[in-house]
Image 1 (cartoon, rainbow, N blue to C red):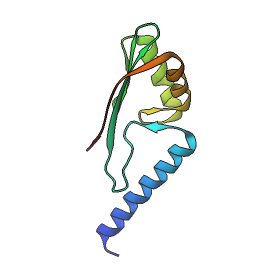
Image 2 (cartoon, one colour; image 1 turned 90 degrees about the vertical axis):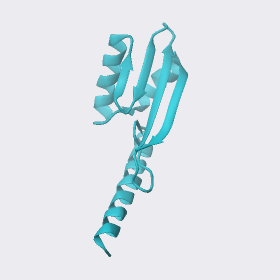
Image 3 (cartoon, one colour; image 1 turned 135 degrees about the vertical axis):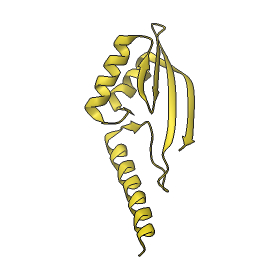
Image 4 (cartoon, rainbow, N blue to C red; image 1 turned 180 degrees about the horizontal axis):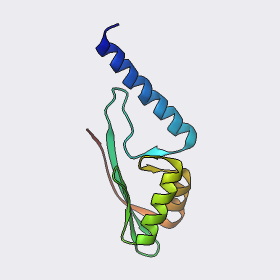
Length: 108
């Protein structure tokens, strides 16, 4: 097997392994890997009941409410080293926020 084929196979295995781990943990990464090793970017924007805006992208969590941005970033860091939507965050978003914008997937 040539070096290129080994590299392609390795990328495919990492993508599959990452998808399996994410499926098991319930974590949705900001940039999941496709079968052919390409990264996809997603961006979401929610409106909280209190009127503040919460955003999630490959750059991480952002909000016009600094407390929410800080809290979401800290929770994210407990579950993943990369920007991700952890199960607890997803539950909080479903209970208190309304999705107002979605961008993606775009491939790098």
